[in-house]
Structures are given as C-alpha cells and as structure tokens.
Amino acid sequence: MGGGASGGHERVRVRILGLYFLTLVILAIMGFHRYVMVWLYFRHKDKKAFPLRCLPSCLRVTVQLPIFNEMYVIDRLLESVTQVRYPKDRLEIQILDDSTDETTAIASRAVEHYRERGFDIHYLHRSDRTGYKAGALDAGLRAATGEFVFIFDADFVARPTS
Image (tube, rainbow, N blue to C red; front, side, top):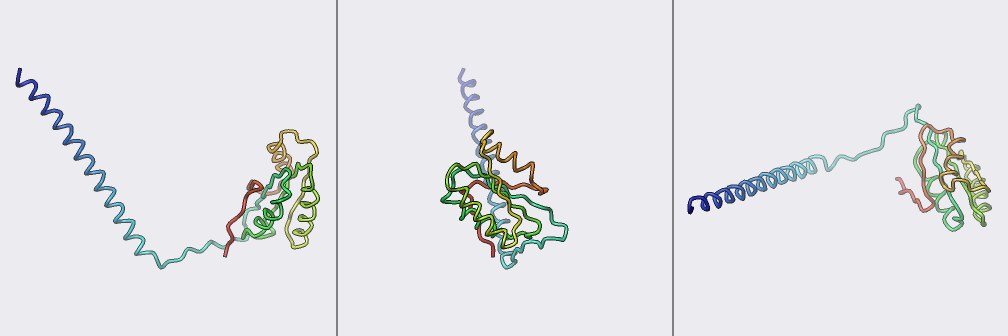
C-alpha cells in the first residue's frame, strides 16, 4: 500500500516539474522576442517613415458626415476633415443632415465656405428621418462618387498632419 501512495506523489511531482519547465520555455521565448525587438529598434531608430505620395491613379474617396442637431461641433468637424492630406480632386465630402435646429443654416454656410476653397463638398438635408442615421448614410451612398467611403461621426477630429 505504501508503494501506491508514493507512486501518486511521484506523478504529481513530474507534472509540476513539467509545468515548471513549460513555463520556463515560454518565458525564454518571450525574453528572446523582447531582445529581438530591442535590437530591431536600435538598428532602425534613425530611419523615418514617410507617407507614400499619391499616384495619379489615386482612388476617389467619399467622406460621409452624418449629423443631427450638431450646431456646436459642425464647424470643428468640417475643419478637421478638410485638413486631411488627400488630393482635393479625389476627395468628396458629404454632409448628411437630418437636423431640425439651426444646424441646417450653419452647415449650409460652411458648405459654401469650403466649396469656395475648392472642396467637392455636398450638403444633403432630409426632413424625413426614415431609418435615422442609417437612412441618411444610405441616401448619401446613393449620391456618392467615391470608390471608398469613410464615415465620421460628428465628434470626429482628425489628427493634424505635418
């Protein structure tokens, strides 16, 4: 009887040692990975990444801005979107407005301002809010000319590019 209990303890010890060894192997792999990452950092730290220039065949992009009663943020939103570094002739901006307040007048003035600055910007106002935001996006998509569509909410602020 004593041999059976001793054999059970031995199996537990072997399993614990196996788990310990597996843990050591995983930690060694993680340590080696860390070493490689630090080595790559020091090897490439002086190289600067530059965005690729847009080829003449850049795809046309439509930026959809669905808004509803956003009179306090519409100017900031448009300023941010118009600062995106992309060729103006390949960028279409759609303001999809379902507003019922002064946002409509503010957005209309902003559209004229940016149109004068050479942006392809369109103002689409719906008085029937069928489908709410999804309905506005669908209506804008039907008029969109871009091959790609980006959708930014009213609280979006793009990072300034240098």
